[in-house]
Every structure is written in C-alpha cells, then in structure tokens.
Image (cartoon, rainbow, N blue to C red; front, top):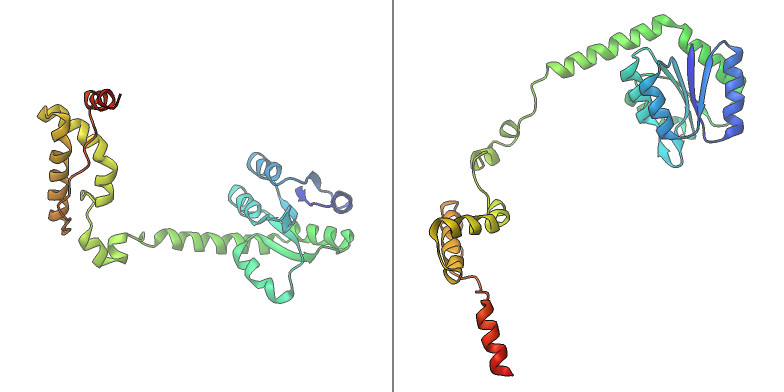
Amino acid sequence: MKALILRQDPEAACAVSRALMDKGFQILCVEKLDVAHALIRVDTIDLLVMDERIDGQLTHSIALSGERKAPFISTILFTDRDRDETDDLYLLIPSLYALVGSTVDAYVVGRLALAAVSNTEDVMARVTRQQAIDDYDQSLPPLVLHDAEPRYAASVSDDEDSPADLAIALPEMAEIRREELGAPPERLDEVIMAEVAAILRADGFAPQPRSMPRLARPEEVLEVVGGAV
C-alpha cells in the first residue's frame, strides 16, 4: 500500500507519515502541488492524504487526476469547512473517503487510512457507480451550437465571412488585389473599400460610402519638404 501525503505544515506531515507507516503504508510525503501532480502521473498511489489548500490553492485536481490514473484510489482531505459546506465535496471528488479537521490527531488519520484501503467492497461499489455515470455521460449526444441556438445557427454558416473576418483579412486582401489588378497605390484603397462594402451589403449591412485616407507617396513628401525649405 502506498500513500501520498501533501500537507503544508511539516510537523503535521511527519506525524501523519509515522501513523501511516505504523499501519504498513509506504509513504511519499511532499509539500508542493506540482510535485504531487507529477507523482500521481508516474506512480500508482492507493491513498491520498492532503490539505484542501496548499498556498491558497485547492488540491481537488490532484484527487481527480489520481482517480483517472487509478480508479481504486481513496482520498482523505484535511479541511476547515463547516459541516454544512462539506456535502458538495463528496459529489465533486468521487474518491473522497473522509473529511477531517486540520487538527485531528494523526492516530485517528492512520485508522481512517487503513479503513479506506481495506474496505474493498465500498471501493468497488464506488468505482462501479462512477463508471456507470461516466458511461451515461458518454452516451449523451454532444451539445451542438445548431441544436442549442437554432435562430443563431440559421443566420451563421461555417463558410460565411463576418465583418470581423473582413477587418482581419483586409491587409492581405489589399496585397492580393494589388497583384491581380495592377492598380496604382492611390487607386488601391478605393478598389478594396468597394469590394468590402459589397460584401457587407450582401450580409445585410449598409455602410455609409466613405473612402480610406490616401497615404502620401514618398515623392510628394519630398516636394512638400522642399517647398517648405
């Protein structure tokens, strides 16, 4: 039997480690979330004994990751929650075996740990129940946007260009049309704006006629500067 202990208080972690070793557990004791995540992925853990928060971060994801890796894993969680706030945790973390206060004696935790891994019938029932829930979720049809929002789906197609798409693609459109039409720079902005306006009108928009400001050519800038000098 192998247990992973994740506690922020080193003294509390040592006390729990000794209690679990007395019950025959092999111990992996860490105090960092990322280290615990790594160990869960590479090793087979039978029992998790963790604080609910480490450095202000919840440790629920470690229990969920451990259950994906080893469905028979059990979890004991140290928490400061009130009794009325704990029911949701058993729904959120299927592997959760017991919630205990942060100051519970290590000897009690050791007895809970042994019971968590010894009661194979309860573990099997929990795994079977969770597997049935997962199978049911997999059998449900996927949620599709066209089913959930029919009015929105009717007005939007995968191949339809939106005004945002046009705005993003406008510089590339300009370069392509410059090569295709061979238009001089001073005429290119008018050509592109006309094409964009036509697409927007086809989509139901009615933009006001407006031309893009023309950028001065280098020779014009030189003429102005020369005249000013």
